[in-house]
Image 1 (cartoon, rainbow, N blue to C red):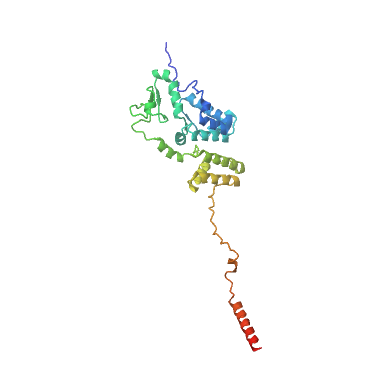
Image 2 (image 1 turned 45 degrees about the horizontal axis):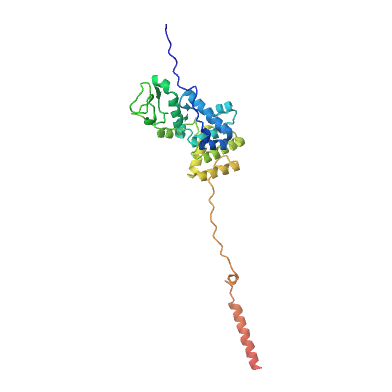
Length: 288
């Protein structure tokens, strides 16, 4: 009798949820800004991630899939995701470089959840593993650490050519994902502009959206000024962004008082006539 080996299971059937979740300031702000929808999107993403393991790779369509599953607008899904990334509930650098959703907290909970089964069958992890070596349990075999190199893995600790910083630079040429601004307020303003632009002129291709982001970055390096530029373009219903006009200071006008009003007048002619009249009048009195 031939016994077939069980298929390897990478994901979880359930995951632990902290009872003090709603005491976390990040979750409080998430709920305050986006209501119950924000919490639902976050929990939905956690379920999707743990179902597959400790991370999830996404593409340009996943926002629409979430929108359909949760009966929520794609723009709101995008706004919530931007917030989650900006507040480090998901790792923003890894998302920008590889369109991967995960976090150090997610991976800590994952390795604890798989502890019993991984003791017999160690779990291999690769470039998306965020925990340091001292934080990683012995049954997690990570190819990023120098003391381990899997035969079938294309990454190893000794010749790690795909660092997160290098991947982030390479992501600038990718067109299948959008790269949110680091400032959540700026990203929120930008998403509002896209919504208005879509209503006025129709949707844009990912390449066009990325070109707009780059154009905004060239106009100013200050986030406050960028926000002002975006809001002005949104209010005006413009197709693109334009630099803010710098106000020039007008020269101060000197205030004139009652005495200064008489300055500049020439009284020399009048004085000569008056003097002449007095002299002539005086001569007539003497002769008489």
